[in-house]
Structures are given as structure tokens and as C-alpha cells.
Amino acid sequence: MGIQKIYYALTVLFISFLPFAPSASGQDVGDKQKGLASWYGAKYHGRPTTSGEIYNRHKLTAAHNELPLGSKVKVTNKATGESVVVRINDRGPFSGARIIDLSEAAAKKIHYRKQGIANVTVEVVSLPESFLASRAKVEELKPKEKPVVTEALALTVPAKIPETKAAATEALAITSPAVAPVGPVVSTPAAVPATPIVAPLVPVLGNTKVFVIQAGAYGNLENAEAQVEKLRKLYQKMPIALVEETVNGQKVHRILAGRFVTKATADQARQDLNKKGFQGLVKQAPEPVSFASSKAL
Image (cartoon, rainbow, N blue to C red):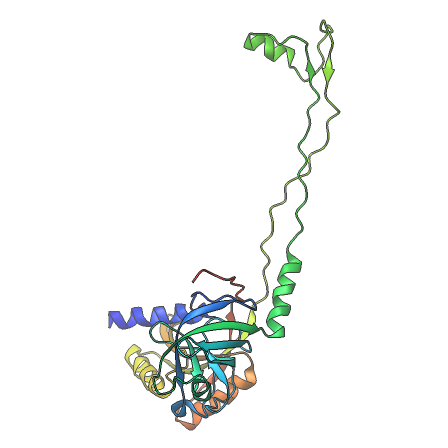
């Protein structure tokens, strides 16, 4: 039971920081990522994706764990050199070291449907306008750096520097001495006020609205875990988390399923759950906005 609790805790952390696993992919046009690609087909045909769209195995789409939903990428099969452009509308894959999960039609295009897995290069072709607008807004919020001016002190320097520390302290006094020193005197310009150093502010963008489905709330942990297992068997590609809360001094185990960008798509998925015997409630949850840059492969 202890191992299961750790597993569910890690699941919650994983879902909280999606999009999603921090691998080699960036979020700029031209960024490339290399790794394994898989595909999914008839088993998921007609089911809701993370974006809320209904999965169609005959369309050129894909699941990716990092790129914004709506991005387009070119996937090249390294074995054949063939490429296909797909649109990211789902999250995954969630097993092994795979970096992308293509639709059945896309896997056919680059000829690895029979093999199941292929070594590929994924190149970002375009990013959704909403993502670019959000990133531009964050850049605008960054303050422009101001030049730092060092304050100049007005000092009277004698022609001959005394050798002793005491004499040096007396000769370099900021205030003029009562008796003018012998010899030429070199003076510095008047003091200039220093410009304060302003630390760059870290722009904070309001959380994007993300909706989840509460597919159950149980006082008994074992009952909640059993319900989670039933959901996982039906929806293997949907993120499902078991969250423990305390309400009026009593522990409540809530099941949260999916991550949807609109309430309408979340409600559509909830209706699909209801048809399969699961009562659900659509709730809003915060999602951090990611602006990851390219990383070395």
C-alpha cells in the first residue's frame, strides 16, 4: 500500500508540471528532438484527447508531452528519410523513452506502422498564435536594463603622497583641509548622484485555465484506488491522479481525470465518462505556463 501511495503522489506531481516531461524539446520554430516514436490507432479512435478533440486515427495528428497543443511538427523516419507534418492535439506517450505518439495514419505515411516503433527526428514547424501571444506579453513585462552610474567622490589629492597610513588618511580627507597643501592640487569633478541598481523582475503570467474532471471522491482509500484502476483500463492515455484532502477533519480521496483547455471539451469528456458508468464533475485547476528554450540532445 505504501508503494501505491508513492506512485500516486508522483503521478500528481507529474500532472501538475505538464507540459509535460522536461526532455530535449524546445518551444521555438526550428527546434529539433531525436528519439523513439510510437503510434496509436483503433483502440483510441473516437475517444477525447487532452485538447478535447475526438481522436481520429485517420487524421495526421500526434501526442507530445511538451509542445503547446496546436503546434505542428515535421516527423522524419531516420531509417527511410520519409517525413510527415502532424498537429499536436494530445499528451503522451506515457511509457518508455518515447518522445512522440503518432496517429495511425501518420505512422503509415512514414512507413513504421508494422514495426510499431521508429527512430525519428521531430522538428517544430509552427506554434499556436495563443502561445506566441502569451510569450510576447511576458517579454513586454520585462523591464529594460538601465546603465549604472558610479558615484564620484570629490577628493583633494596632494602632490606628494604621504608614506604613513595616518598621514594618508589625513591628506585624503573628503573635506578640504584648513591649510592649503603645497604644490599643485588635482581635484575630481563634482559628485554625481548614483542611479540605483534595479534587479530585473521575473514576469509572472496569470495561470492558464485548465479543467479536470473529478471522477469520484471517497473516504476509503482502497475504494478510491479501485476506481482509479477501472478508469486507467478504459482511458490509458488520459492523465489520472488520486489527490488526498482533509475536509472537516476527515480525509477525502478525490480522483482527477484529464487536462482540458476549455470547459466545453472537459464537459464532453465527462459525458463520455457518464456513458461508461462514471459520474463526474468538471472543475477548474491552475496550470503553469511553460517557456522552455531548446536544450542539448
